Image: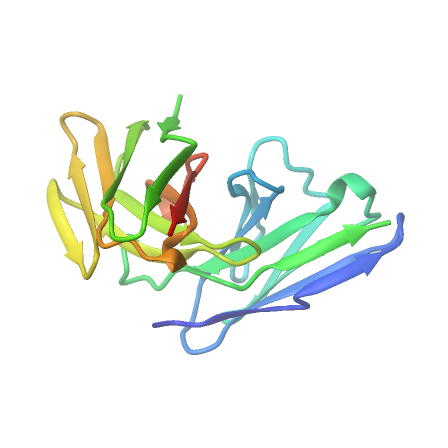
Amino acid sequence: GAVVSQHPSWVICKSGTSVKIECRSLDFQATTMFWYRQFPKQSLMLMATSNEGSKATYEQGVEKDKFLINHASLTLSTLTVTSAHPEDSSFYICSAREEREAGEQYFGPGTRLTVT
Amino acid sequence: GQSLEQPSEVTAVEGAIVQINCTYQTSGFYGLSWYQQHDGGAPTFLSYNGLDGLEETGRFSSFLSRSDSYGYLLLQELQMKDSASYFCAPPRSWGKFQFGAGTQVVVTP
């Protein structure tokens, strides 16, 4: 199956700093990628849809100025958490979908962000 | 609005069969996917029902009834490694997925 990678797998940063998370589709091209956030013992919450070559589409309640998304190529999307605060500590997961697969998304391994 | 309901937790012994039900209310229904997630890991795809009926993949099967807005995931011959969270997730438009709250399956010896 298709493989999606994320980097870094975990990161600790201080309040007020920014953190960039990369999501790559390794063996397929993804015109669309998705970013999710998951708090402990909770479900995945879709944050935004990342579109190659255009602006990301954010879900209601997600601050687009805080969570900057760039989809620079067909295999790379980045999520930057700007001016991070402890409440931003979470598990961030990206996914990508091959166009021919209607019901399947391929998830990256996730990035655990801890803001101190 | 959109809603998904699935049980929060199910406990069963090794070798048993577990059924995880999922009822949904969602606009623009395209089918129902199921994902497994182990603690600290990313979700992995299990199955997808685009049409009514049963889909079988090894020990796991999934069923969908559009008329009842209902689906289930069946785990057979439970193994310890099946202890994980299981999410039903209908694809929304443009490939977006909505995830249910998840069902924690606990397999005991």
